[in-house]
Length: 176
Image (cartoon, rainbow, N blue to C red; front, side, top):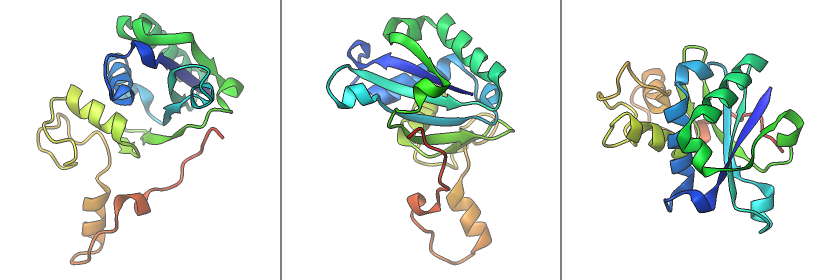
């Protein structure tokens, strides 16, 4: 099941509105509660056409109860309610025409496989990590919340130069 949260960019008090929106998401929802969920982000198609000012974060959930939990937690969040666009949510087929890009995947163990800058840096700030670009930072509570691909590659290929991160990504399902 897909659920898309809509944020009114004009209500966000930040030039990095994507990161600000992800901070709201991470404040309302724990990674462990998103196990098995793929995440997507981007401006709505109407925003790109100049008809609205909306940033979207979408969740492709493994079951309907997870989508219901996301909707309930965000609806209870004062931060989200203050900056949400109307309508606040889109479900299933209403999400299909949005030009969103993969933002990551939460594993069954609640670890975040990162594909995008906004969600990773928002999560790092909320967890108090000074340098979120370092995926092996010892300050992360309970270990890394996302997969360190570079470290995995160095273990598999000792002494070899690492490939750029973008070449190691696995393609994720997209809404378009």
